[in-house]
Image (cartoon, rainbow, N blue to C red; front, side, top):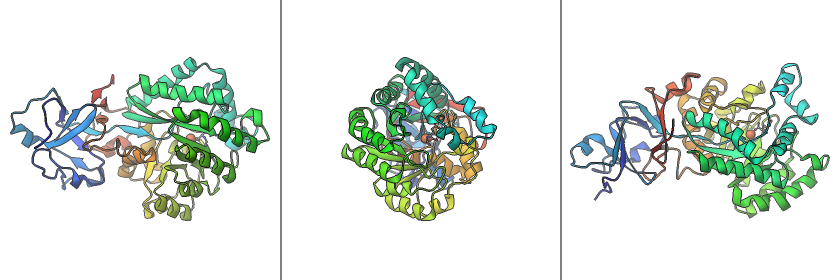
Length: 427
Ligand code: NIG
Ligand code: FE
């Protein structure tokens, strides 16, 4: 007995990039035959001639179109892809989309010879965005972030992680988290909010980073629990050290929040391994990650999230150790790191291209990095990131023949429509 009722919206006529690691395990609802088209590019788990039945916002079944055609079944609605590509909605698993102001003038300073670290030490950098974010009303923050999230959504993003970290006091961090959650409520996108209070030492605690960390642990984390699913920290010479980072993560774990880390971006600190050993779901940036760290990430199942936008915009030279990540089977995700300082980026597709051209990922690795592995970086791979029975019907459809085409070209968004929970959004 199959579960086809006729109440489904059916997507058919698409070439489907399932991004399923085991496409051979995908079965036709009618005959139980394997759907895997072995002749096709298995890296993307491609399926042809397969229909997707959607009900209640979820993928209810997959079925061979030729078998469906032999039945008398009719459906609530049929969406015909006419040969277009259908892929999982993209997931931007690391962003700082909510902030006040911008830092174009610091970018100019960098081009005139100052470094990112020097600007930060002089009280600019993250702290200048902290002033602008504190000064902005909640509505102003929402309106400016709304424009940014709209750009991501038009390029097929259906889930985005958004960090706080430009408030650095309880009220302002909560203000940022509320805005992040409101974006998820008002736009056709799922938002995962992450508390990044340990981003920089708040001005009130200047010269007293330990005092600030205590405030984060005693006050900000406990009062943020209901607004976020994860806690992040920036471990770096210009931010927090290993011991301070550890305190933040221990506190987060007491509240059963996931942990994530900004690590090994500008120097090697050992923070990625520390976080992995504490059960971090992802370690992000990682240009200075060591081979031994890759062993640790692989063993712990921590996702390596690469952020080529920050690498590019800061004109960095040290590349993340992609070969060692592969050797140790570390899942690699790609994200925008969208923020006003190191990565003023609003295109995940461009990040896919940069991950290939700058870091040497293959197009299928980049594609996995924006879908199934990005889902793993948010610990949401049971719900999103691939086309599989039971997962959310979050689809991006494209006027291209192959997934590689999407990351190969730059600009000229080839979107053919985005579907969130099976419903076409306004794009
Ligand atoms: O991910 N590395 C730390 N935080 C951000 C940058 C923040 C900023 O410069 O405003 C990042 O690159
Ligand atoms: Fe970041």
